[in-house]
Image (tube, rainbow, N blue to C red):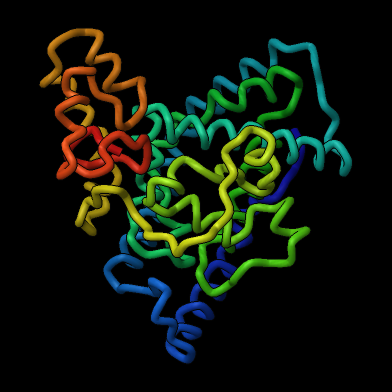
Length: 303
């Protein structure tokens, strides 16, 4: 078994230091166009992050068992040396892109990921607003394990990807030089991802590289100022509600469904999906952008 560091744990002091620096920067140089910080919102984000550490530990038990079984069954083995580690980090980032994209367009997966989009602020504490139900993520990395990548390497590369994405959750950094903006996920690209405007929805899914979005048609550059949060915000700082509100909305929609086809659609189709007859009614102008896929609504199945 390869001995690789827990990069998330090692990065915690840097997370704290950078967050304090960002908070101080808003005090010293206020920006009327930036969302900045709000105490309750930041506390909720930190609470969600701490809770995710606990729940992730529980989810890892069955996930590691599944990965270990697949790894034992495959005859393939990828050695862990510096250059293969770079290739595996690249592969993990590729599968992360598809995992992230899937979690925006399949409602039961969105119920997990919506947590990360539930803040109307955008600062470094937003990066800590992590879901508590990450059991939906593991299937996307099965191909790597089947090709002989040790599960410990999956954990290491996933941690490295998560650590990289911490710094892109800020409004204090404008656009970087063009070569960086072309290749990497940057604060500018990630601000678009967290925005709730129609033209920005379901865009810029990359973790480390933005090249995947450019390759697969999901890239949008930042032009107008983003409006953060969901298209219908949850208006709560209760961590339990933040973690579970979309699952509760799915359950309500299943109970109200008229057929098994509708029930399946409420779970496995997009966050904004409705049966045709209800979709027509929802197109009334006063209902707003209910046809958008994500971010999703809390009370109604509208994105």
